[in-house]
Image 1 (spheres, rainbow, N blue to C red):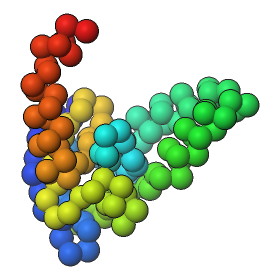
Image 2 (image 1 turned 30 degrees about the horizontal axis):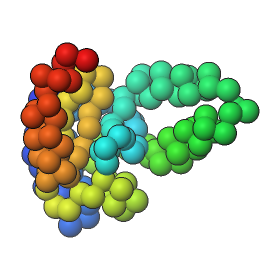
Image 3 (image 1 turned 180 degrees about the vertical axis):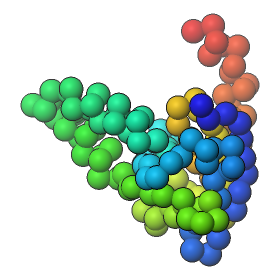
Length: 137
């Protein structure tokens, strides 16, 4: 289970430190892809397999379903921790998420999300203002 928020800077090679609390659940290879609201999502091997199987259940003859699968799989990269506990965020994903130099990694139960720090701050401020309404829905 991934919990909490951690702020880290990208180095000059676009690598980011994965918090030690998260590393224990990231064995071997895992997956980094585009997420909603300009975030990036890290999936463990198990979670990625679940997502893949769910996407495989979509009816291929549906244009929207084909687009969803294409976007998901074409933007996904397989990554692993280096010896210092970092992962590389490729240029395409970095640009998509608008990550400049400072990012926030958030635990979201079975996944990790990576956001540009400013985009996250703007997003969370907007969500917290409407939290009562969101919870009522």
